[in-house]
Structures are given as C-alpha cells and as structure tokens.
Image (cartoon, rainbow, N blue to C red):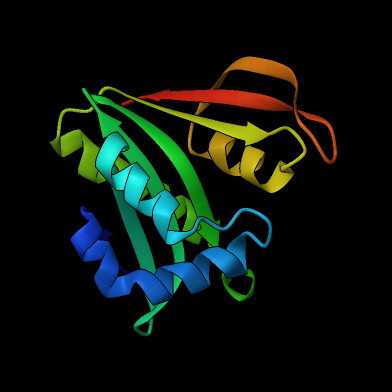
Length: 150
C-alpha cells in the first residue's frame, strides 16, 4: 500500500477524476461536487490522504487542519478493498503526518448506525465525547462525536 497527500485545490485538479470516482464508489448519497471541494480547500485548510494499491486509489481520508486541531470530514474505502485495514492504515498515516506538525487533537462525527466506522474509530483509540440526538434523517439516528489526543 502506498499513500500520497493532496494539499491544495491545484493538486486536487490533477487527481480530480480519480477522487470523484472513489468518492462515488464509497458514498453513493454523499458525493461532493467540484464546488464543494473548492470551498473546503479555500476555507477549511483541506488535506486529502489517498491510499493506493497497484497505483489504483482504493481509499481516502479528508481532513481539515486549523490551529493544531484536525477534523476528519470524510473517510472511505471502496467496497472491494474493505476489511483489509485500509481505513485504519489511513488514520495511522494521517496521525503520523499530524504529529510532525505538532497537532494536538483530532475530532470526527459519525452516524451512530455506521457500526463499521464506530468499530474503526474505537480500534484507533478515539474516545466518544458527545452524542447529538436525532441529528441525522432518513433514517433518523444520532451523531456521535469522537476525539483523539495525539
């Protein structure tokens, strides 16, 4: 498994089709369009870490890094590559990079009914710090807020 990082919208444009396809493969109902990606890069100091297998993108983690705090906005692994610890490897690689930048804390939010994600975050030592009751719709479920101090 190899990894590469995208730091800017200009870098994103080089891989835009690959990222769009991977996003669509991972999130059928939550795909971001180019305008959303552009706004996130411009306003939220967006970073993308991509996992590749045999030069094909198979997973990614999108995070915002502002003032020594990071928020994970999206993490996805294509269906055929799931259960290979790629999500965990992406989180571990992101943490490795963030420690070099002296980042102190990572936050994320996840649907309470996304049990595979909840297991992943627990395995990576994230701590549940808050619950937003009935935050999500269709179907209704809570949002879980996790935190990891690094």
